[in-house]
Image 1 (cartoon, rainbow, N blue to C red):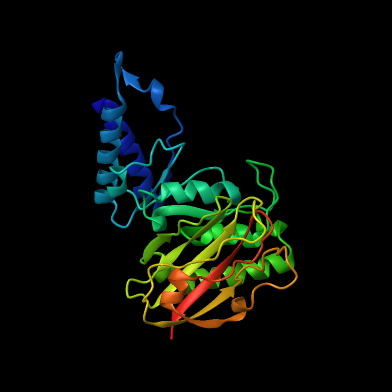
Image 2: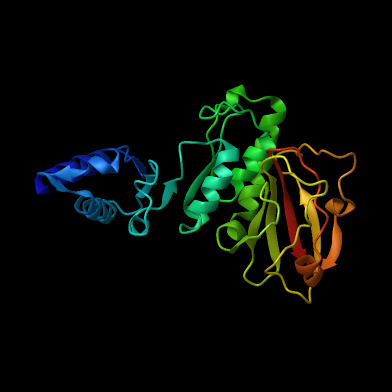
Length: 287
């Protein structure tokens, strides 16, 4: 309805004009099946109207950033991506759930546009308690942030948040511009995914143990999209603390090893046995 559109546009624009606001989050907390107007389905018309609204607000207010809230997917589509700066991926901020949510949302939306925040130790959506290292690594591969009352954090946790934030900032250029790599890992209980530089000079991967493995020895970690003729330094890093290992001594390569890109792709490296809902980062740098 033109009158409704103009009213919303002018009211929002007035607020942005009268106050120093450079960012808004636009929720769409409405079930789409009941969207209609005058007895006719209205989803397409309403969706096109919100595109026009966002475009006009950005024209009137240069530099305005708009975050579109997912609301179960109601505002993540390949049309609205032209008018917003990022998406809030899901109100479920449990890192274990987010591993799957972010994996498949990133099938169509660039990870750097997906809000990925460190949630509280005790997840409000699932009631699960997860290690900070797991929550931090899950948040690393996206538009990262912190959604946690850090006055509740311990001194050690706040120190880890500081090192994690520094790590994210130092590697944001690669994380937000590299090639997304999702390895077809043979154990469905684990994920191996990462980002590699277009010139194949660097890569950052995460190995994630989602649920208990069904095998005695996890499958090797193999890394595609590297230069097969180059030599790389590979090591594990822990920007937010170490994961919980289920073995006395992790594989020696985790301290640092020189290996060819061909060997990394075809032979791989021995995977450590992790406790469920744990993860760590693997850095790969061409020598």
